[in-house]
Amino acid sequence: MTSVLITTLGGLGMFILGMKMMTEGLQMTAGKRIKAILSAVSSNRILGCLTGTVVTAMVQSSSATTVMLIGFVTAGLMTLQQAVGMILGANIGTTVTAQLIAFKLSALALPAITVGVVLKFFSQQKKTRYIGEVILGFGLLFYGMTVMKHGLAPIKSDPTFLDFFTRFDPSSAGGLLLCVVVGAVLTILVQSSSATIGLTMTLASQGLLAFPGAMALVLGENIGTTITAELATIGSNNINAHRAARAHTMFNVIGVFMMLCIFPFFVDLVQLVSLKLGAGPVDQVVEGDLVNVGRYIANGHSLFNVLNASFFLLVLPWLIKVAILLSPKEDEEVDFFRLPNFGDRLINTPIAAIVETRSEILRMAESASYTFRKTVKRLKDRDYKKLAKWRKVENHLDDMQREILAYLTRIYQSDVSESEAKEISSLMRMTNNIERIGDSVENIAQTIEDLIESNLAFTETAMVDLNALVDKVAEFMDLITSAMRQRPSNFMVQADKLENTIDAMREKFRDDHVQRLRSCECGINQGLLYVNLLTNLEKIGDYLFNIAEAVAGKK
Image (cartoon, rainbow, N blue to C red; front, side):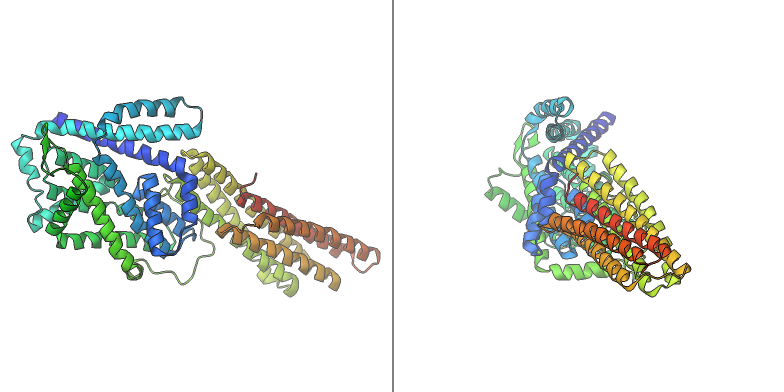
């Protein structure tokens, strides 16, 4: 008994490790393509579903795709409808894994492990190491299946175990419900529907589970996989992220409930489709194993998700409305001084973690833009009380910089690809330059304070010039915040032009100011303050150009 348990759990552990390695390796090798696919996603629900299917087939994990999508929704880079459409596709894409497992590829397990180890641990190139990780994961996955099969073999004729597994009989309502609940709980515990489906296939191939019972377990496993998306929203302040996770849960739970209502017909349909696709009889035994049942289970898993996605694509607007009703209510007032709450929910999915961080950097940039506009307004109205508010915003920018850099460092210390490492470097550069903009705004605010306290005023010409420079800096800020959402094709041309214009304006206005000093139109005290304002506005232009280069991916 002990040896059976140890061998079976060891095989399951090997399977999960292989699945995780394969998924992470695929994410590393396909990261750029995944981002390109996601950035081009259409609002058309059918195209969105197809996109979700393709991305999940690439990374071999619906949980990873769903977490990525929630990260994109949190960042505001994707609408709720786009994300939900893609989540429907993700559930179809994940069935590719089950189809792969159903093929008899165990003979390739040890050769794959050998090749994978050589590539992963002895290669100098990162890309080759990631490919090695995929191959090694593939080998471990199938070797884990083999170990589970050998572990369960001795109990095939044990009356105690046979009596236990006869409880998983979906012919009664209680037995059907038991199968679904056990499948859901197992998937929640191991955090991988592919692993529990692999275990289900092994039990069925050993004759411990009848095919209908195995299909009922698979339906439960589709419910259990939704927990990953729900966990990904913990700590998220983005209401659409909660709605996307809720829609995912509803999609699977309602779909399973509908399928349970016609369960006998569904089982017959799976058997009919499998036979049409060339599978042998479901009860065919070769050397003591049910050799075809894995194909039937994989086909049932695929058929359920295709039928489910097809139905919910038709009623997607209503699905979203119900998800909104079941999600937390949106706060009427947004906390401007809210700090990022990253947590650990996305740290193992670098693509999603980086996207979430980018959204917080955008919010930081918008905060800097806000305080800049509020501060320069005081040049006109000279409202000392309103001017004093800059201190709170500047402290907030400092706190945001510290939180964002700490989280980016954590992501960087995990296993990231070269392109992700480069992007993290760019995000750090953006964050630091936004904080420097805050420092320059602080200098501008202090200069205006001195101007008001000393009861000094600039000449009308000086004010016209100063306002023109302020407007040009504000235009540059708008370009940057807009490009951080979606970069235009001629972005760097615009950025370069604005930076050069700001430099030229500063030089001209400073020369004009010198002329006013010589002609005694302007006093020395206000003249020093005026030059200080010009200098800090020009510095902000430089910082904005640094951010522009980081947004464009330039060093």
